[in-house]
Image (cartoon, rainbow, N blue to C red):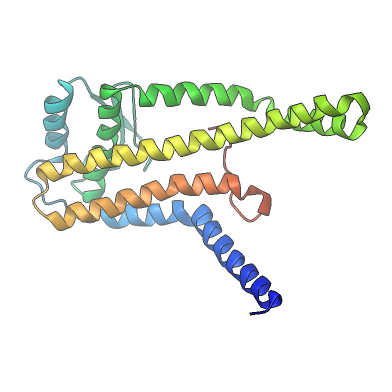
Length: 238
């Protein structure tokens, strides 16, 4: 095979890979919302109502220390400091989506109980968010000093390297977030296996959680592919 053909095949393969990564970056959130609406219509085969399910897990694993706070934001469910923030829609249905969401957020609660993963991530986010205020100034100042040159070249390169370090720290935090979300989903599936009568529904919940995890990979890729101008915007230091 000639060098020309190798280059052509390489360019085509790179273009296909870039298109795939851009699709994940741009449409993973839309896909999750579609799946959310789909799973919100499927009734869970469980002898416990959603609130009974929560109370069962709260008593068994958390000594009834977890509280529920209702929010209005659809699909904005979250866990923080001993509280489950659940949308009115999640609380009002007995769907697979609701059971899966509660299970995943209680997975975070179990992480909080067993160790310092969530606290560590929160501290890292605050630190990098503060450093983020220096990101653009470091790039601008470093670029100017590097262009001026002479005795200012080394300080300029040092500032640019500092900006790169801040950027890499942000990416590192996003990867840690993905790992923590994956672990919470694994714990959540363990909860679901205790009460769901249909193994097929447990597999459906796993697919739903994988779609949710894909949104975090999409956020990571939006940062990586921001230079293309083809990906949606995202917050670098969040």
